[in-house]
Amino acid sequence: MASVYTRRRLLVVAVVSVLPIAVWTRSRTSATSYHDIAAAPGQSTTGSAPLPATTSTSIPAGAQGVAAVEAGAVEPTGSVPPLDHDLSLGMTDPKVTVLQSRLIELAFDPGPADGYFGEQTLRSVWAFDKLVAGTPREQVSGVVSPVLWDAVHGPVDITARRDRGGTHVEVYLPEQVAVVFTDGSPRLVTHVSTGDGEQWCQEVTIDNDDGTQSVKGRCGISTTPGGVYHFERKIDGWRNAALGRLYKPVYFNYGIAIHGATNVPNQPASRGCVRTPMHIAEYFPDLVGIGDDVFVFDGVKEPEHYGAQLPVFDWPDPDWIDPNSTTTTTTTTTTVPSPPSTSAAPMTTPATTAPQAEPAPLATEPPADPG
Image 1: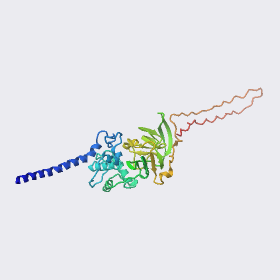
Image 2 (image 1 turned 30 degrees about the vertical axis):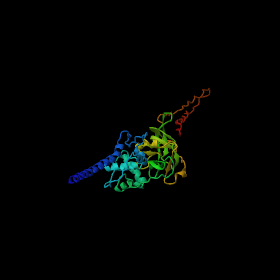
Image 3 (image 1 turned 60 degrees about the horizontal axis):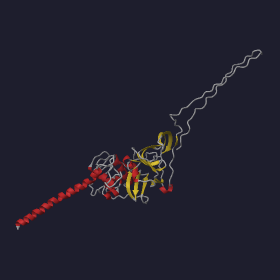
Image 4 (image 1 turned 30 degrees about the horizontal axis):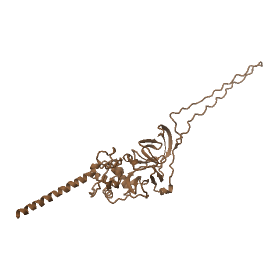
């Protein structure tokens, strides 16, 4: 009887010993599943997390937001350890991976969840700090403090200001943030840079629709008007326009578009367009369709007050000289004939010189095409 009891005891001890190992193994598998997704082959060249295998588009998981989490493309962060130090640009830290994973859950796109705090993560932190934490744009530092860490991992509700079915975009000029909503849920939240309100004059190269290019001197005012618009057309690749060089622009107000740019600072800096980081511009056109609404909030009046407000159209630079044009100066010479000879006594006639004609005015080039 004692030997049977001893054998039972040994069996219980063995089961209890194996159980923690199994639990630990399962937790390790869960902890690395998101990293495996973020680093899997097929992610974009800019480092954005890839889509689940059943998705046929190139939109990374970061742009799927809540839908990606529900579909299993990104694992929820669950229990989050406290942060005892700041996270900032240039750092490599395991907690940066936790931060990036959480931002992707919330529909921000910080790039891959690789533990490196790069420019893409910085701009996602800017967007969160401005839109969710409510920090004024001028005071945003990009540093994730323990306080901001807690806010990122706390309850977050990003609600559309306009209740629309389907897909629409909201651009918030005071915060310099844009959000793509699908059926009321955020699909992408991104930092942007819009018109700085300055007047400019510059020689620009413009891509014409027939495949040719024109060089012109143009002036304009860098304004992004508030109002209600819709997407009108998309251009793949780079586009040279009067407002600058645009990457994958999606136009919604004449020459104003949402497009990628290499310079997207934490302040208005464009000539009127809505700049996004380049890695977001890679797939942004796939998130929206022609005809989808765009609401631009200027912080002064509601977009509906303006309606489809016209932009400030650029105009010809009056001081620009076309380097391919030529100017000519015409000089006219007048010859005075000698007086006829007569039989009368010669008379002394004072010599006179006819005045030289004024030069013809300089030729000028025709005005630039106002289009």
